[in-house]
Image 1 (cartoon, rainbow, N blue to C red):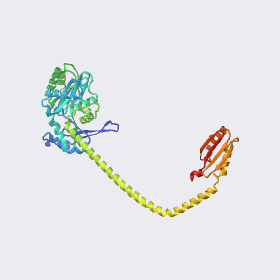
Image 2 (cartoon, one colour):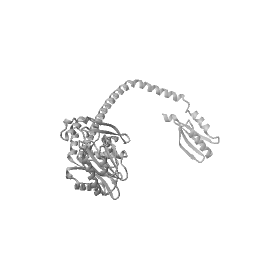
Image 3 (tube, rainbow, N blue to C red):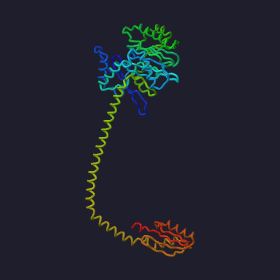
Image 4 (cartoon, one colour):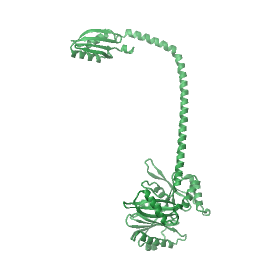
Amino acid sequence: MRDRALHWTTMQQGNKGEFSLAERQSSDPLPLEEEGEDERPFAELFEANAPRLKGELHYALPAHQALLRVMDLPTHEEEEIAGMVEFQIDKVSPFPVDHMYLSWEMLDRTEDHTRVLVAATQRKFVDAIGEACRDNGLTLHRVDVDLLCWIYLLREAKEIPTHGRHIVVLLEKAYANLVILDHGTPFLFRSLGEIPADGTLDELIEEVEYTLTSTETEWGDQEYVTCTLWHWGQAPRILDRLEEATGGKVHTRNLSSLPDLHEGVALRATREEKAITDLAPLEWKEAEEGRQFRRKLIIGSAAVLGLWLVTLIAFFTWVGIERKGERGLIAEKDALAGPAGEVRELQNRVAELSQYTDRTHTALECLREIIVLMPADVELSSLNYFNDSVKIDSRGHESRLNQFYKGLSESELFIGLKDDSFDGKKMRVTALLPLGDDS
């Protein structure tokens, strides 16, 4: 939310898992005369734009509503770091921990220490936006902090030096923030308060001076290499005083040169390499998981029921078709019984006639084939012809009998050999005929 309007960016995930910018949108601003309690703008803005908000919903809380602290902790497992974070934040928070939502993310990690950013906010700020979403049928997936999203955009635009200490002063349209980085890694986040409507920034300079002084006490005295003032519109007339406060040259940059803040919120949400700040309460996630589970259960049950009904309908349809087909086949069988009998009788007569007229497998043809295949010095002892086979007894030298046997096995007239036996120089074998196999 900015300028009494709702701004959002939609990121779309492709088939390969990468994210791309789908669209940027902004709502119409609320009229000034409708301004009331803090919750009212939320409710009215979401009510008017709820149908246009699709997918996972992420929101950036203003930095002045959050407490941001950077801590150097001993390197341990994440569960142990989470316990240390809660213990440390209780020392610096002006509110009890049980009245706040707490989150943290890792900034840097070495073998000895882990630098973490701890974010905390009063529950009323997060509950207000969450209630406005729920009232309009939306589920808030995550709550970020806008200052962290600005730093992310600066880093992506390569606007943050990776050497020495660097000061970033962000002049939003209503509030000012300060971030100090050491070799590209933040170690201080500070909200400088609301920007006066008359444009005087004396208090802002005093806050910068006080912050830098307290930083030297906590993090050590070190010369600041650069300072960048990010602003909207024309550069404010405080450069000389800001240079005097920071002790160096101040560069000015326009925030309009960066992507929109809501795009930074969406881009931070697509990071997968490590966890990021999330001030949404655990109860929201559990409730959302429960809704998703129930939704999947209902969809799954409906799909199973639908599949069962379709299967049942298909089964009875198939049974009906089969019964109808069976009745039709029975009727057709009865109708064809007479002609079929006549055809079978005719086939039998044709077969009998073919048996007597076909000379392919007659005894004479078998004898001719055997004589052709039999080597010259092999003697045929006996030949018995049957309807389905020919029994052959022969004598001769063993090698000639083997040659004779091979010729019989390769003959196209016979379909195979059986009961073959050798006794010295005698061979007995039965050659099978197709007529016997067909019959």
